[in-house]
View 1 (cartoon, one colour):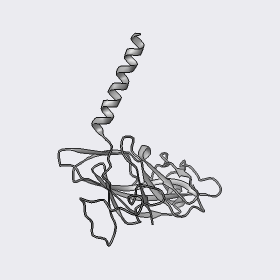
View 2 (cartoon, rainbow, N blue to C red; view 1 turned 90 degrees about the vertical axis):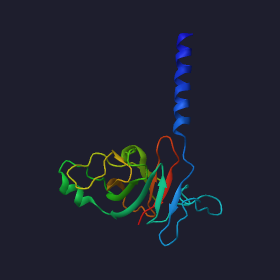
View 3 (cartoon, rainbow, N blue to C red; view 1 turned 60 degrees about the vertical axis):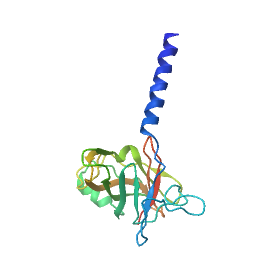
View 4 (cartoon, rainbow, N blue to C red; view 1 turned 90 degrees about the horizontal axis):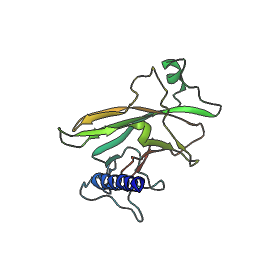
Length: 190
């Protein structure tokens, strides 16, 4: 009986924590060349831009979610030589695979006294035309400008590369941001 009560208490605490954190349904996509209206998300015929794989935010867009603004700046593909030069012990992609570096810029939209938190290892994936999700390669070392997990205050901007190993014939790449307690978004990359 005591064990059942403890389990119930744990579930109640987890439920309250999830409710306190909430889930964000207010995703704003600022598309290049289109005036933004931060009060109104930009809907499409069936889903909001950036909320599904079939309707990702266009390349160059800024996506605002979880009090952070995300934008893909550039990509390096293939990035095999960069990784190999960084450290001889870095992973060598298997036959038919290559490294791609996705440079992301993130701005904390909170007040100057509040912190944002971002960890690419646990919240980002890369998706291509084959429908396969690729996790970041967390074992790359010796390479400048890699984006690591960090906390940063309101108005601060962080940027850097997130490395992935993907199939060489992947096209139509999409960066997925999928935090634990919030909505995910899909952002097409150049």
